[in-house]
Length: 202
Image (cartoon, rainbow, N blue to C red):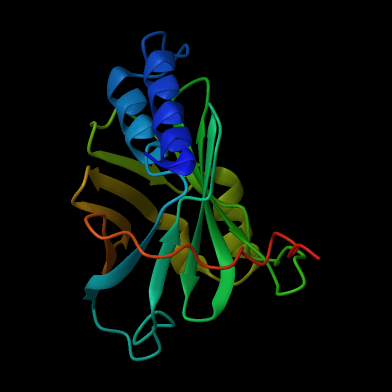
């Protein structure tokens, strides 16, 4: 076992131990879900669009290489850069809260400064399952969408699903719209460069 593999394995075991005493407000299902995602820490995976309804000709994801990298993990936060081709502006941030789990979207410009449309997402409203957690748009996100003339997004619901060693799915739904991206967990790929929110080492 390489030192890197041993470190990831030890980290996953540590999170499992933490899961035996879940935070107030969290559920066992959410703890398991969080631990399953954290167990991927350090690995990257290729994705593909499996649903785009109705089809959108201007979909910025279409025809691009899609990559997720479970890059940073702590007891309460997992940061997952999501790359679309050479665009490294997006990072999913999954966080434990006092009442469940939270998903936020951190968007950056190439110089690392934050985009105007950033930090949107929401909190879980129920326990979900070990395989799936849903995040309806929160009040701050709805206000941001209204301010940025994206009124159709106020009803967004994001979801993440994980089937260990098989697939990870990111989903966006709202009335009349569904996008699902599926990542192959069976075949990790080399880690990509850091996201634009992280300055490269000199």
